[in-house]
Amino acid sequence: MLNKIYFISAVTDFELYNRLVCQNEFVKNNKQIERVSFDNSRDNQFISKRYNQFLNNYDYSQEAWFVFCHSDWEIKEDIAEKLNSLDVNKIYGPTGSKLLFEEGYYFREGRGQIYSKRRNGSDERYPISEKFEDAYEVDTLDCQAVIIHSSLVKSYGLRFDEHLEYDLYVEDFCISALLNHGIETNICKIKCCHWSDAGYISFHPRYNNMLKYVNKKYPNHAFGGTVSVIGGKEITILSPQERLLKQLRKNIRQNLINDGKKY
Image 1 (cartoon, rainbow, N blue to C red):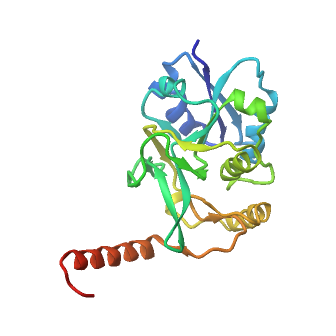
Image 2 (cartoon, rainbow, N blue to C red; image 1 turned 120 degrees about the horizontal axis):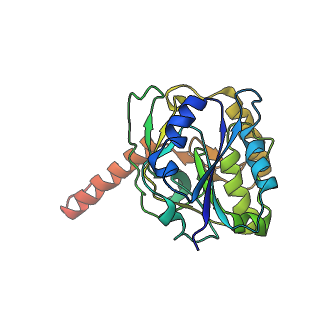
């Protein structure tokens, strides 16, 4: 029997939500999918609290996939078959990040891909990622979408940290699941689009405040986040530009060696 799929969102713009989610051909035409929306247009509560509100009231005798997603997240393919083929013992999402160590330096590597647009439909972009296949492990997921099976939530009592307002609540969810229960987070390859202007403006000051809070939770660890390194461990990290320059120098040296030249 196929599991039911719940799309859970906190909504402030119902016109956008209706267009991207409710009227989405891959949502409304699939009887497996049920939408759950929390009205944040009047009572704007933390998204973490809204997600926990769903988890606290769910009947866990009914197994299902939970897709916690932003109301401006649009799927562009039928995901039911894909979800029902996944290992229920892991957390999934379309895009995330991992912290890697190489030759004495740490660097963040983005994994997964997703379309992005401004909310007026302009400036469509498709970021390039080195790791876009299914099952690539990540430290954390971007908050636009996180997918988890009800049985995993039930087994470990997983919840979102309600101290986190609108930033880092998904990243913290992934880290907490890993450190406390050994639960891995993987990329799930989904054709989707994020209709948000957030990537075109500077980050809100609250992000830094929430980052300080999360870093104190994990003083001896470091993880890759979409925006920054997460955790209190002091490390030396290469920026994408520094890593590229380092790789170019390495390639040049190797080419010289292959040509039998000194450098």
